[in-house]
Length: 382
Image (tube, rainbow, N blue to C red; front, top):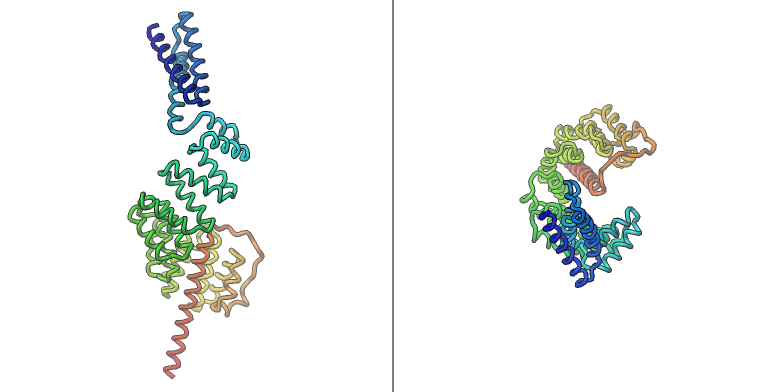
């Protein structure tokens, strides 16, 4: 019984403390805490008046609603999470418009609410309201400067809104504080790449390597960037590193095959294109077949060249345009079978398409220069 009396004094003390804070701060959150505590106090007094010793389950329940839950709610409050704010969010459920309305109501009542600002920013972002999303993410960062994920989200939105300088500055500031933050390094490098600041992108990617070794995306990004600078030696080195980390990411094998073609190392190129035709990605498959056809033509194996060219078209019908515009296929165009349109299974993005095209055009230029030099040498001998 003494234990129950001591406990009673404790919960009454918590109740009085909560009531004083309610009066002093006029915060409706304390009403919820008082309500929970009041239920516990009533149960406790009933037990005392009837001289009933509660069993373990009943005692645990009383402790939960009179001590544990109030303490948890006080902790949440100290972290900036208000009970009525959480209730408003929960009430909205999956109704997006209601969620937006309740989040705005929360922010009006609690202007410094980190949670509501972040959720509202996410709402704006998902619904295409990019300018509003910018404002909210800026507010989130001001409330919690170490929310590094939000820096990246905001930089992405700046990038989408064509505010490249703002995105770059934001990520540079973040990396000055946290140079090992891999996600920010990759994002900054990618934005610099997209704005054709290739040398600057390489500096960022190389800095990231100091803190995060053996990352496929990082090595592949370096391979792509060196490709755009026509530094194919370095590009090959990084594509090789990428393919060793993730041999299933077939785009690296396709790019490597194209680079070996540029170096006129046809057997090595062929090896990587054979890897490419086993890909699950139909664009990678089709381009690999196309280059295998080219190599077969170079080796005077016309029959196999026709087979590979037709397999490329069967896999990805639109590739026929590339074949028709490539002088290397002039001798077999009459034996090419056009296909109807079909949905192609691919994950190749626009940036990767440009790399495939760039390497293809570079190879054609190199091959033409070699042919011109050969013709020039023959004429000199005459």
